[in-house]
Image (cartoon, rainbow, N blue to C red):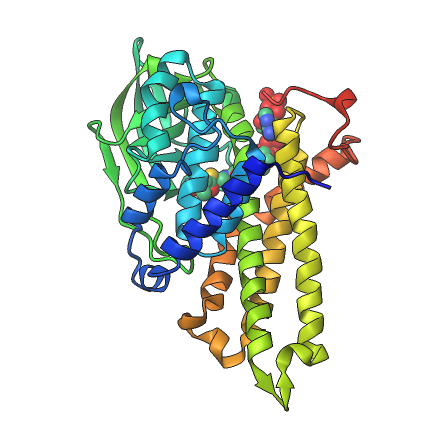
Length: 395
Ligand code: CAA
């Protein structure tokens, strides 16, 4: 149904080899000690996984979104700290700059971001602005040729390691969300302070921190888009980001499923492999069915983005469903593994812990339901993927 070209299959195989051969050894220790995957991220840059969709003109891979989700799925079967670093860099930071930045911004920043020389972060959430993202308290005061940026951002993926921050901040409070700007901030500018690394349930080796800005001088040339475009920028960019997190959730579910199938064929109880007991076989059947449904939603959203159709609803559906499938079936994977599932050596408990965040970041499941229900109530019951009659430029 979805035609994977030779190029897609090659990307998928390269990501699978990298994940199984280079991420799997050491992933348990990195997770349990919260060690940042420095070498692994460097290698992801060398292999082209950090700027997959960026045009070759700026040093990127020039690939489509489907290639990106195929790679995300394989890497997420194994190491979700690496895949969230990859996802934020690709779909929030690089894509956001390439889609909406000036030529100067693209030439200055993208070549560094695609190689991993620089990692980027997306700074929208605040202590009191999570799902309610319009309530930005961080301010960007217009000083003529520059802004003075002040405020605190929370839960920032790549917070400690990113050299470039895309920061949403309020310039015209009286205009509410229409007064928000997005500024490109370099981490070593005076006034930027990075908080301590959070000690998390899952994705434990990625660095999640708060970031404080105190009168940081940001040149006007570093604003993305027109004055007041920042909230729309964040929403448009997050739609693509949600496809990345959906593919992460898909990879988590698929990884737990593959481990469960293999384990259930090896492990015997009551005189036969546990896969031969209907109690286990039916769990595997449900996993296989729901994972395939999630995969179709994720690939569909990616193809709609590639075809420049409006993919907001498709991305929200893919993220909502894939993350719920990841949570539900990683719990089942632990159950299938029994006592072994409860210890780190068998990998499924880590995938279960990692699954939880996919229902929270880049818009909680509840936020996805807001996006979907508003579309549904506006009459967009179903957007056929290949119907170019209803095509609408995505940006
Ligand atoms: N594209 C363009 N514009 C959009 C848009 C989209 N997809 N969605 C909303 N907008 C625009 C609306 O048109 C509106 O603009 P106008 O008034 O000018 O028409 C404006 O944004 C406000 O929209 P709403 O009225 O719908 O706002 P709301 O407050 O009712 O709801 C929301 C918005 C959907 C709940 C939104 O706030 C949201 O998505 N919240 C979740 C935020 C989020 O995903 N945070 C993740 C943090 S980043 C992260 O997690 C990265 C990481 O590190 C892994």
